[in-house]
Image 1 (tube, rainbow, N blue to C red):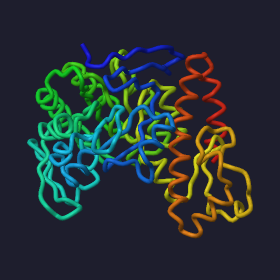
Image 2 (image 1 turned 135 degrees about the horizontal axis):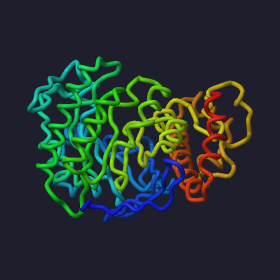
Image 3 (image 1 turned 180 degrees about the vertical axis):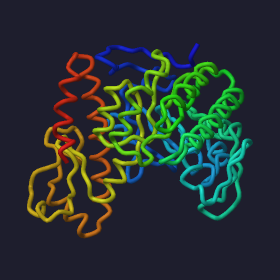
Length: 371
């Protein structure tokens, strides 16, 4: 029996909407998880994040173990209390950082050893230590196995090596996690862009048995079309009755196309990263508010939005904030972008429930793929 019940409410094609029930609250799917890497969603308070409609956020094992340290967070009452967020939290295992910090890390069968980007100190991360940090010290609701995310492009032999190591680490992660009623463990499918490898990875994960399943190793440079080609088959290799989480994705069009292929959960730094650089995501695609054409534009980003940042400030004012290098501009655009991503997932949930998702998808593609 899985730790958290997952109820699928409606299906249209491969797209589905449902609810993942956790002790800290329901997660409505499709779900977008704002990224709170270092116990904060950048430029936002937890109350602002909640007001956008987010049911869950993501924290990062690698960053929190380095600063302030997982042990300190534990002494201060765990991650939820530390950052004043009382809804579910999913924590990334640190596997992605293994790839991105390859210049200062060493990977072996036992562990990954790396130097801190903060102070150069040496650290060892094993599957067991990753579980200890996430489940016991941080108190995550959804815990991810430690995996190796292979950089793209990759030869098949290299992708196989990473997939097999991830599968062995999945077993070690499950053994370390054991059985828990108030926390869930997700396994991670790997295999780069090779269907046979992803099929084998999925078979090995299903044999071990997890509360949910993630699709890893995408959004690492392969591009939208190549990602969609993998998603044509990858979600269907995973159990239908458990949530499917596409890690690190992505742009709004990526979310819509992934939902059409059976994905339930997402995370990405894009909304707040874009917001800090003057880019706003809208129903008609992204806009750059630093552009001179917005200098006297009195219209808001979205007059119909419930989000004050989207509804109550003119594009001219937002542009002024960025040109004047005022911090408020970053705050308001990050807030708007997170609200837009939550509105997008809410719109997809409604479209699936009402049997009109395919029409929603076609109309969304027409606006966003022309950008």
